[in-house]
Length: 606
Image (cartoon, rainbow, N blue to C red; front, side):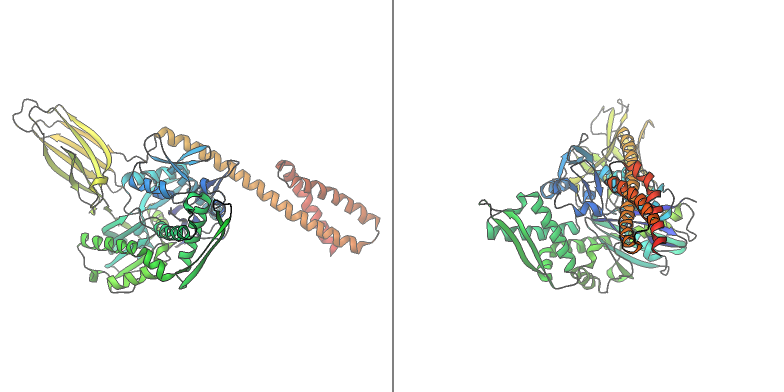
């Protein structure tokens, strides 16, 4: 049976897990890290870097290094969230051909799903190296409050990366799976998920037979650790400008150094009460003098700068509880998920508001990927324990009414699958056509409605006196696919649409990106093989040189040994010329000779 990997495609870091035997485990990458930075960069030569290697060069290549792309995925360029990112990001965000946000990296304009696909490809390679076999299927997690277009964009990223995404699962739900398999039936848990770029809270009930029922969910897809970092950056910029009359945001490299320092300081302040930020030669003034930034930052100051962000997350929690029809005392546990939950102020606030210590039994960075892997295994029958998810629609669904209003048909937090019907009347006598505009909207954000689809009911009875009644029905299946039908009551005339969410990419574009990504992966694997051979040759060259030197000092003037060493020196000299990587085929052919030379010298040395 083929393996299904679980992927937590995070804003700051991503993680991949797989069911190995009876246990799901996170797969470490080649550097030994359990998580991979969600960063992509393009070098001067056009080479694409992903993960840790991209993060290491972010300061010197700030304009061409992408971070927090998840905050842009599935969004229109002119949305408030993208406009905010345009003002703060060190890389360039531009408008795509379909009005969506895209990213300019050197001479390329890449869609956000393409950026995400590069990260997913990296995780796919990590999984394949660990399993020793190709990986084709994946369950990928998304914030519970992602809309349909953001979910589709994430699925498209998986397709571009060469993955069959068999299910998109909400991050808090995946975390609950990793926590709940060992919990008693009837447990009600709130999953507080404060990640790098998004915040979610879901209230779940762990039922009989491995049933995970979501009772309510709420969130903010633009609230996370990135905002905490930005508050620190704003503070540092203001302090520096007050002292030196220089705006650090005017320099992209300085801005990236600030962001990097802010992130490190934030992490350090989870375990210490104060830390130092020291950035020498960060910028020059008008006279060409090098300026340095040095500031002491206390945990208390960090908490002061970010208190309103934490309060926002608590308000969202209370909304989710209210929507689920529960009180704080009805909860058996509050589960902490996401890197930001290491912040002592968040832990204190949770304890204060809910009247209980939060549960820290799951790893905040790994539990989402583990839950996704467990769910993936259950979908293909590899997990013996039954696992059933009963999820909800995070956002309200409805149609635009005459005059631009919104009429809700499916409220947020409705368990799916579901169906709803509502009757509408034509707005004027003799009207023969009714447009049905399907929209999705977050609670208390009617001004940010998302268009999901549009169709028309034609041929309405024009002879009817007065208004004509039209029934509009919504049906949502277990996969979240929305079908909408309109029918005239009198005549039975019907029109319908299956709403297909859009990532901002057309099918031909996705297919072309798939081909390009597959080719890039082949080239990358080939390049990695060459690099591995080059490193092996360098290691052998060093060993042979050392063994030769030892042998010369101990062998004397033996003519037999002299001839042997002359032959080895010839191979060594040729290998040293080829380790620059310019002729990998010749180096590969020479490797066996170099290995034999090393073996011979080892035996002579003994």
